Image 1 (spheres, one colour):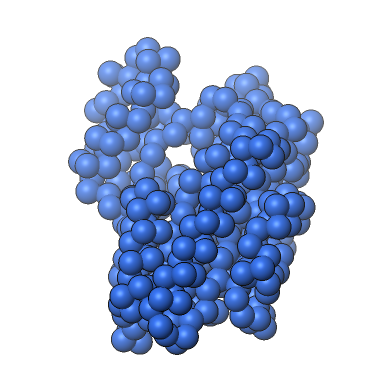
Image 2 (cartoon, rainbow, N blue to C red):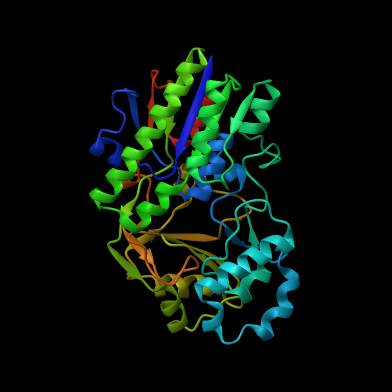
Length: 373
């Protein structure tokens, strides 16, 4: 039996239902609860079946001076003026490529909007390629387990264009070369960030995906072996409904990063580490009028992000669905759509679509792994 799993990043349940995506080919369908966090959280969860509290990936950057791979970059500080120059997108993109090469990172790496002068006190989670054997060690990933089971398997190269990954998979299916396949497509995520709510743009892309999946199905038929074909996603996309300026509020409160507190401010959540006891009350007072709430310990445990070592922060503020932190460590401008809000947000739901009945127990993104085994 050949089992094929196609992962389309950000193909939300809403889009699947609105456009009737492959209802004839994949009639077994289920709305799926996303993993709290972003794609950088969901992908390790999909590849291991573990949640962030175990695999350690919630967001790209954490405050960890003792573990920072960038500690030696302190010498750069005198050259980081004017700050406006180092915040230019093209400059940061080229600097990201240089840092990745210098440090030998094999995973996805991007500075985004993180102030360069803060890097010596920050750790980065995705230093290694998550998709290959040992990529999430000591936790076993899909490549580790499929290899141990002796399967002939294919896992897409995330660096290649999605059209090339679909082509490579279809060829392997026609030749009967694989028992298991994980086909990865990331382009819909970026398209939704810019075009959420634009049915003309999104429908056209979804129809192209339908054509690609049908081509995979035809290749499996041509391969002559019985097969199961499943398409799943990690989250949907929530339209922009407003912004809040965290850096301005913190500056107004007289707080200094690296002295009073440390933070990692993503598009939808702000994580804090208290460097002085009195900073907690001051930060929370600065955020008092922001639309959102501070996560309780019970919520963090429910979402699978609670850790005794506070790796992900001493406190986390989650914005209301649709509200983005801007500017943030992700960038200086809001995007038309974003994910990473409360998993209960109706726009956040992911999907599982298959030629065969949905396995019992598959209701959350963290359940995919067992189904793929």
